[in-house]
Image 1 (cartoon, helix red, strand yellow):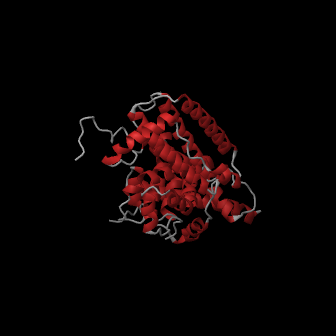
Image 2 (image 1 turned 180 degrees about the horizontal axis):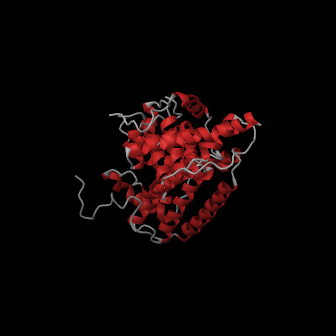
Image 3 (image 1 turned 90 degrees about the horizontal axis):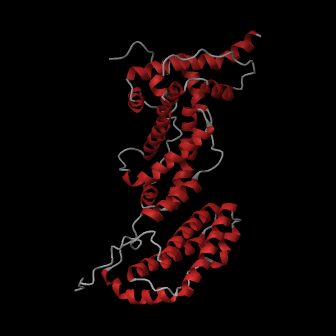
Length: 190
Length: 183
C-alpha cells in the first residue's frame, strides 16, 4: 500500500533539481591509491599465501639444493637496475633499492661464512631464491614507479626472510610453505 | 540509469582479477576510481575521508573478488561495498543512530549562482545521513527498501529523509537565486 505521508520522487517540482544532481560531474581523488593497494596486496600475499606445493619427487633435488645453499648461491638480480632507471624511481623506491642492496651484501657475507644449514632451511632457502628470481624478472618488465616500488618491497621482504633463514634466525620456523613437502625419513616413494 | 557506476565489465577481466592478476585489478580500479570516490564524497562530504573510503572499498573488492558469483551486475556489487564502507564510517560517528531534525539553513551567501557549485555547496550543507539518502535515491537509483536495508532502518525512515532532504536541498539551492532576483 502506498505511503501517502511522503510524496513520490521525483515530484514534478523536483525534476529539475534531480536532473541537476545527476548532471553533477564526477569528482576525482587528489591522488591514485592504486600503488598503495598494490603494495599492500603484494605484501599480504608474500607473507600469507602458501607457496605452490612441490611434487613428491622434489626430494631428489634436496641434495643439490643443500650443496648450493651451503656453498652459497648467487641471487638473481634485476638487470643493472636498468628498468628502474628508465622510470625515474621515487624516493620511496630508491630507499627500497638501497635496502635491497644492503641485504645483498649481508647475504654475500653469510654465504662467505658457508654456514651449514639443515635440510628444511635449505629447502626454504631454495624457495625464497626462486621467488627472488621471479621478482627480479618482474622488475625488469616494470614500466612504472608504482609497479617497481611494489616489487622492490617484495624483494626486500623475501631477502630479509632469506637472510634470516641462512643466518639460522627463526622468523618462520618451517620452510616458506610450512614444510608441507618435507616428509619424515621413513616416508616411502613408490 | 543515472549511476556513474553502471559500467559493464567483461567477465574475462573479473576472472583474471579473481585469480590475483594485478593488471586486471588495476584496470578495474581505473574504471571505478572516480565513481567510488564521488559516491564517498557525496555521502561523507570530506575529500580526505572519501579518499580513505576509495582505498578501503577497493581493498575489500580485491580481497573478495573470488567470491563474486555474477548473479548481479559487478558494478552494483562494488557500489554496495562502497556504500557499506561509507555507512560504517557514519555509524562509527553515531550519526546514523541520532539523525533527526534537519538544521535550518544558515544565512546564504549572496554570491551569484554558479549552478553546479551552488548545488554541491547546498548538498554539503545537508546532514550526512540525509545527504546520503538523497544521493542514493535520486542519483544512484536505490529504492526506499534498499536504502532502509543498508541503513538498518525502516522504509519510512528512507522516505522521510528523502522528502525533507529534497525540500531542504531545494531551499538551500534556490536561496541564492532568490536573493539575486530580489536584489
